[in-house]
Length: 246
Image (tube, rainbow, N blue to C red; front, top):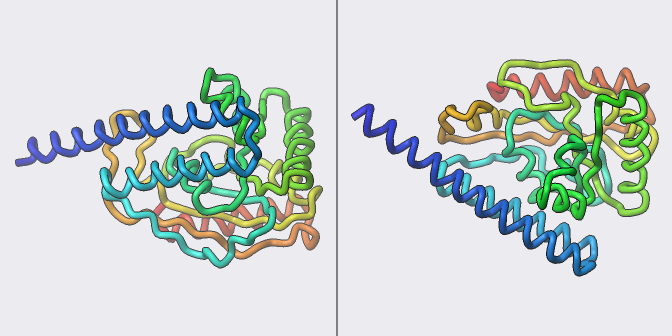
């Protein structure tokens, strides 16, 4: 019986991976098509919304993972800086379906990949090359100001810089807080336990269950220093993450 269950779980994972690749390819081709044709930002963001919904649908139907969202009332209809925990691929897809008009800060090398990179460029993603130190932060702030002020986009930033395993809580980078201070838009802290369900290693099983995500109350950057904002977001996000078992 255990072997049968193991095989069923393995088959389920492979089906989802195939589904995920098909959705990714479809979305990338659609985004590149509308982007090359000069579609408006609204149309390009609608493609991101489709991508998010299809991925989340597959997560529910194939993997039996229901994503429960707390604090939806804390998601405003104007630009904010969303500072989020980063444990898996799931959160990168979920945001597009929840936050109106948003873009991501991501590794520069992802923007240089064929097809996928161009897709993210059309989605107004901000590339960051952390090997460049201070100049990288300056670029994030410069591009971030453009997205917030000129294009009216919210920005999603993972302050840990990369995906981290469940139970680990590394220090936050300050670029998100600096960007909030410069633009004057609120910070929304985001916690979740997606890493419990989506393993970081190739051989990990994806567990069924209820994954939880929480949007905290807005923080006005004008009331705090960058260091205070960093500490505050770190405490709020990780405390909530721990309460979720993440």
